[in-house]
Amino acid sequence: MTVTRSGPLPGAGDDSAPAVYDVAVVGAGVVGCAIARELARHRLRVAIVEASGDVGDGTSKANTAILHTGFDAVPGSLESRLVRDGQARLLAYAAETGIPVEPVGALLIAWDEEQLAALPRLAEKAARNGCHDTRPVGPTELRRLEPRLGAGALGALSVPGEAIVCPWTTTLAYATQAVLSGVDLHLDCRVEKVRQGDPHRLVTPRGVLRARHLVNAAGLHADTFDALLGHHDFTVTPRRGQLIVYDKFARGLVRHILLPVPGRLGKGVLVSPTVYGNVLLGPTAEDLDDRTATGSTAEGLAALRAQGRRILPALVEEEVTAVYAGLRAATEHDDYRITAHPRQRYVTVGGIRSTGLTASMAIAAHVVGLLADGGLELGPERPLAPVRMPNLGEAFTRPYEDAALIARDPEYGRLVCHCERVSRGEIRDALDSVVPPATLDGLRRRTRARGGRCQGVACGAAVRAQFEEARR
Image (cartoon, rainbow, N blue to C red):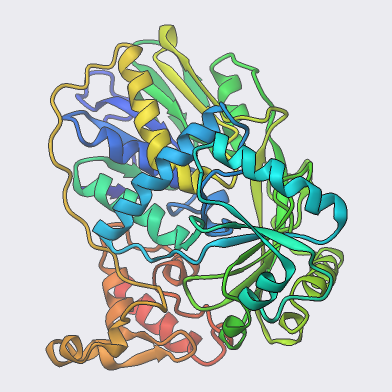
């Protein structure tokens, strides 16, 4: 069980050392971790190499947290097939591991006659994508389903299979299970060069990591890594999505995921409850050149509020807990860019947009199949190490609510973060976990501590003290 953040890599700089991995997965986002977990079913030497100091620290951490049905994907596309397959896999995995999921359903709302006319076509498209349970909703029923909806909605398409999920726990569950099953996770390990050969040599500031097969799951940097292997099949255009998080007091205002009719830049601005009990408004869709531009802007937030006022007027009067922005790895193509290069023993997993969370487990199975077709000898399967993740979902029993648990361990009854009701026991567990956080933000994604309405004003010192105590 190996997680490293510093020091030389195993076998770095020593060609006679035995540390040649069978597969190196570059990128520890939700897709990269899912691929490593899938590979861990076999007796292979597998490494995940990640530039940042934590898993899910790039595009994965700012996902809109929806478990999609794939109803609006391009029929016949790879994305359509993998989202559909991935949804079923992730639902089952969430039940097994404790990842919070709420099947709230979605309403695709028409605000003008043109959008209303598009709904039957979208229902037909959903059916072609294997989503047969959509149905039209008239304005009267729509008002009954969502009493706080703004004026002017003409109708909707109900998509009951859509759900909300915790993206942070999902990525962490994959990484934890992969590491427990023998995968090496090397964080703070940016790949700067690739020297092709058998094995390939990944040059990093921590030395050279050698691997016979490579998987590029580098997200926003997938095209850059592809170029290191001599491929120029697509260009990633960072598409910024700004979001506003409303306080838990707003949760009663909305019952479903409220979607607009999709436009050229994607699904548009939505209003969605979260499994943490908040309400999301967003995202924007801004194509940028800067792959680090994750800041929010006054213009973007004002535009979101204007759209939110139309969708759910009472929402924009509620208190805002936080704003944030993420970057989606958009490309010039409509579909995922998953390509095998057997002669190089290399698979590119590019162009994975917001549906990648839903599709992650299906992408992983698909990529492992491509690796096997490219000569990777998988050998027999073995059971993965079991994992059970801490619950961050408000719809399920939290530790502070569990009298029996507190009786066994009073630390679960000592609240540190009162906004999110996070106990010392949960923070302790996260700091002592298989993939521990390296920063307070990482701790927040594992526990919700400092993520509530005070944003750490009340609990920040206590959380930091416990964090630093554990690092001594």
